Length: 417
Ligand SMILES: Cc1ncc(COP(=O)(O)O)c(C=O)c1O
Image (cartoon, rainbow, N blue to C red; front, side):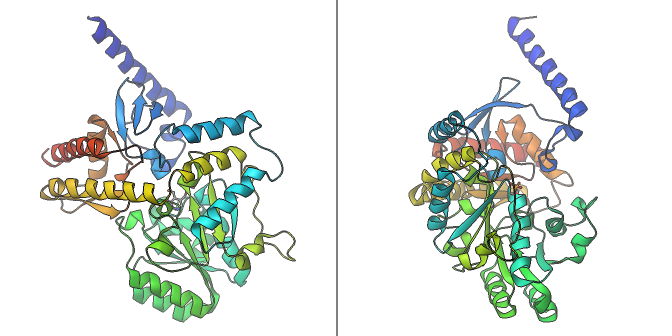
C-alpha cells in the first residue's frame, strides 16, 4: 500500500472510531437534536473564515456557520482578540461589568427604539423570558404562536413546531398557548376577537425558516401589530436569526413596525452562548428587582464578559456597509443558483444573507433534504440539515461562484439518481 493510501485508510478508520465513540457517549452522536444527521458526518477540528477543516483532512466551505450564528465565519481576528483579552482578565464575575454596560448601550442604541436589554445564554432562554415578561406586564396567561416556526426548545415555545418535537413537553404548554397557521389573517383575527382579553402576547418570527424562509406578508405583520395594540397584548418579535438582515433588525428596517418586545441572539454573541430581550424601559423595567413584583430572570452566565467582548467586536464590524455588501452577495448567490436548481424541481428562497432550499416537485422524494445535505458534504459544502445557507462576511463572489457549481452538481446528482 502506498504511503498516501495508508494515510487515507488510517483517517477513515479514525473517522469510524470517532463515530462509535460519539454514538456511545452522546445520544444520537450529538449534543443538540437539530444538528443530528445520520449517518454521522466527520467532526470539524478547526475553522478559519468561510472554511472548516474536518478530521478526515478535508476542508469544507461553511454555509452553516453554527446555525447562522457566525456572521464573520471562523476565527475573525478582532473577535478572537477581544475574547482572549476578556479571558485573560478573568472570564466571569459575580457582578455587573463595565463591558456589559458598554455592549448594552451599543445594542440598544443600534436598534434605535429600544432602551434596555436583558442578556441570557441562548435564544431559547430569551424567548422563554420574553413570554414571561409579556405575562408579567399584562397579568394574562395565553401566548399566541404561529406554526410552523421554531423559537427554541422551551416547553412553551415548542407547540409552534408541531407534533414532531412534543414528546416530553408539559401538557400545560398546549393549554397556555394557542397555535395558529403562520400568515393566516383570518385565524389571527379570530383568535384575537374571541380571546383577546386573555392574550398576553403574540410571538412572531418575521422570517420563519420552517414556513419556507421568506419574510412574512406585510399585511399579516401589520395586522398582528394592530390587534395586539387594540387588545392590550404584547407583540414579541423573535429576531434571534433575522437580526443579521438589517442594521436595526427586520421589524423596524423591513416591516417598519415597532414591537413591544424583541428577542435577539446568535450573531450578537460573536460565537459565544447568548440571547437577549430588548425593549422600551416602560416594559423592560418589569425585570427591575426594585419593582414591587418584578419579573424574574436569572442566569449565572448572563452578560458573561467573554460573550460581551466577542459580541461587541463582532457587531462593530457588521454595520450598514458590511450588511449591504453581504446581502448583495447573497442576492447574487440566489440568482446564480436559482436557474440551475429550478429545472431540477428545487428552488432557493430567502432574503438578505439567509437562503433556504425548498423542494418544488415530488422528485427528489422523501428524505430529500438528507440526501442533498449528504451530496453537498460529498462536494465539501456544509449547510444546515434543513438546507439553510447563511453567508459570512469573508465570502466573496469567487467562492460564491465555486459554491453554486458544487451545490447545483450535488442537487443534480440526487434528482437524477
Ligand atoms: C428563530 C429562532 N428563535 C430562537 C431560537 C433559539 O435560539 P438558541 O438555539 O440560541 O437557543 C432559534 C434557534 O435556531 C431560532 O431559529
